[in-house]
Amino acid sequence: MPAPETVPSQPGSLFADPGFADVTEVDWEAAARGALRGQPLSSLQTMLIDGIETAPLYSPHRHGTEGNLAGIPGDTPYVRGATAASGGQGWEVRQIHDVRRPGTPDAVTVDTTSGVDAVTVARGWSAEDDADALASCIGDAAAAGVTIHLQAGTSPAHAGALLEVLRRQRCEPGRNRSWLGVDPIAAAACGWSADTDPGDANELAAAVERAALSATDLAERWPQGVPLEADGSVFADAGATDASELAATLATGVAWLRAACDAPAGPGLDPAAAARLVGFTISAGPDPFVVTAKCRALRMCWARVLSACGVDIVGGTGLPLRLHAVTSTAMLSELDPWVNMLRATTATFGAANGGVDAITVRPFDTVSAAAAPSALGWRVAANTQLILRHESRIGSVIDPAGGSWYVEDLTRSMASASWDRFRNIEAAGGICAVMASGELEASLSAEREHRDERITAGERVLVGVTEFVYPTEVGATSESNRSKLGASLGVHRWAAPYEAGALES
Image (cartoon, rainbow, N blue to C red; front, side, top):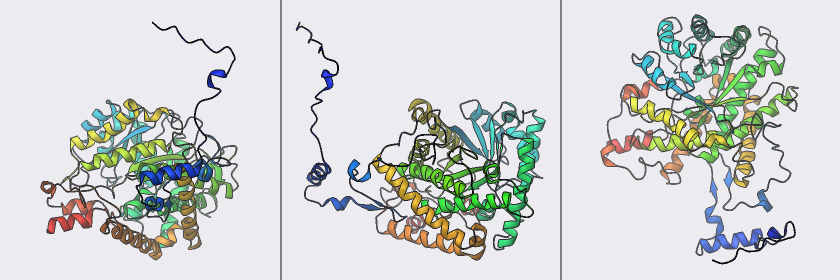
């Protein structure tokens, strides 16, 4: 047996010469060109749908983090997380359910005893007619301390129905952290609200003011709850790109600040107090890096909004931003719906790495099911999160994207593009005005057309739909299911035009 090597006597000498040569950016580029076998390095450049160009090679010389103002986790401008432990303590697993379905109480029981932390109540229920159904579905879960999230777009009446259930279940107001989802803008965008005309800016703004006023009462009754919501996912489902979704989300947040602070009929709060009433929801698409950058960019931009309103963001007043991500409906396909499992997995991975507080995964057969997602769809939706959180340990790292030259650059680019579009919305009178005038719909229509052009040209592949199509998966589309998914701005799935072509052929 050979004798063991002698331990160096001088401290630090073991690592004095690590044996790695200094490598410059030119060296990296040369190595990349060699791997491309004669193709230029520029052949790897890509352009995201938002006009953001991604480089073929990232390096500390061009995309380094020196001088980056992202700070540290929990520090202004909160790019790396809303708190010092962002991402390191996992996220809240939410499961979406329709309280009007007969089997929902049993499904909620199964979920909340199998690792699910919160129940998201899907839109469509009536605050008057379905109050008993709501109590039957989420009453026991609420009593056990499970967070209840009313999907954004609810009215104060819906919020009141939930609070009545919590009161009956003797939930402690000081500990319950439920989201009440009050958001007239989302209700108008998704077509749920029958009381507010999205084509009347004054009426929509008045609904926002009334909701802001009611939020103060809701907050007094349930101080740990989140009464108001700014939901960008409804715009993403209508065709918005990632930057446009963030812009609309920011504009909705600003609409809440105006209503709560400046409106004559509002509660007259200061901006910091108003900000604490709002929770944010954004969609998570199939590109995990883009999703991570979206989460980080939203925190950066919202900190800038609050700073402009005079809020001390350095001291953290009015922060941290509470962020919920929901997997995109627009990315789901009816053909080969099993691929939706992969899309949901990468979306969840990206949102978790972005430091969100909660995630809702839509069942993979949300679109393909004739009436409602199957029990398998709901179970897989929950397990997607549980496996990533508990087995893959995705939620055990604080800001895992921090320092990545690509993600840091993408975050800055996403924030810049979103801010420019947000300013355009504000210059046009705000989110209520652009919705009422039709400017928002025209913009989303143009973005949908641009996306379709890229898919048709093969620049963007929809697995199982435009490429790698499995013939036996071609089936009839449920028109009833299509119509139930949206009205007003509507839900425009990326795959829908190509599935129609497959069916015709």
